[in-house]
Length: 77
Image 1 (cartoon, rainbow, N blue to C red):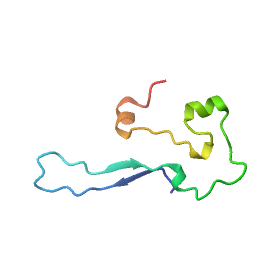
Image 2 (image 1 turned 90 degrees about the vertical axis):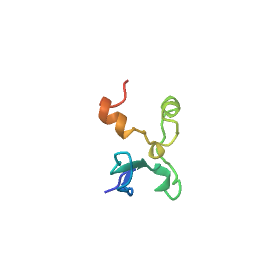
Image 3 (image 1 turned 180 degrees about the horizontal axis):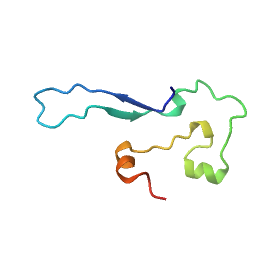
Image 4 (image 1 turned 90 degrees about the horizontal axis):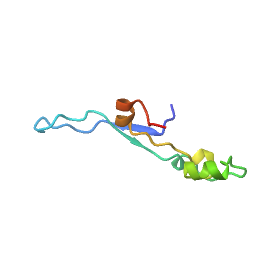
């Protein structure tokens, strides 16, 4: 299954003084998965592009902090 969020399990030493984080998550940008920009790529309107930070819709990636999203239920409007 394709996802922009990847996870990995770091090594946790038995001698660490702190409680280990068993699974860590990181985000990968969508431009890693598009080898070239084809013609007639779908675009945002100019005002939407300013809000999104990119002109092309396939390159848009809203970043959500997984810890903040879980605790607050998402970003406020």
